[in-house]
Image (cartoon, rainbow, N blue to C red):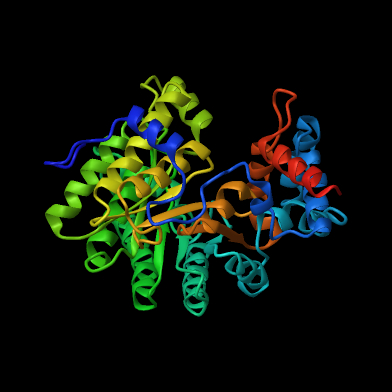
Length: 418
């Protein structure tokens, strides 16, 4: 994992660097993710109180359970006032708008606070060729839209919005033989992905290709590597996503880097912890194969932080996006940037969090001068309900304690005396 001729910084050294971190050698404010004054500077008192009210509702496990069931029901049958209620509450917190134009005020507000936006069309799990083409066209529109705004450098694309899950699963099997029809179908998938990446390159934008379940990820890696080889010659247009809660992804980052060097292109690496842990472990148990997921959080954190370190050690040839809500991992990356005396705004060094969450991380990084963005999810209310349910569940207390987000909001409410 180490670059020949350079010592690898140990995690214990990283800890010391992070603890000692006090801005960069060339000055600037120190990072303090507990600073709620900076975190919520973009919210007036009324907005902050509404946010507090909403997170208090989400802190109720039973209420979230009922709401999640109603939410999924509302995507199938008409429920009175369903869309208006959702749009006024959790949708407003976690989504930019139902359309790109409706999202523009939120994007411009973030830009005023030195935060970029990653456009993410929130529709999921499509099945028909017409649906796949509609998703592709929406991605193309997002690229056109983003190219007109200075604070939108990238869009995110989910391959299951462009291809059948079952097809991706079959392509991912090393011993599977595609039928003539399936080969034609996968060729169409490749054309859709290529159209998106080509258009991004033409418009000066980038594309994050999301990671998904392990049993379809080889097909996604195949597509991402092919696109990086094609479009990442002079700058990083395409990023693959590495889920570091997987036991094999740290090695795969190094493997991907070697592949990029061999074929003469730059690697785009977005690092996340992962989103399918329970599903992955359940499937492994049911089908009798070793779980691909790390045994515990410490192991995930270990690999995540080493992955960030590896990317920064090779930052001239790797563009990394630290897409994490983990304060420690964000602080470690900032500490490494400082320790190596790299420009905070280096185009290959990026941070990212979801819109409506971890504002303490996002806005403190922005205030300190780092490249940081919010994932700006948009789409019709019924299309983004699965996404919204995941966000509410993430902010629900399972132990009776206050959630992290609610604790921070309440701290700022108290500081303002409102």
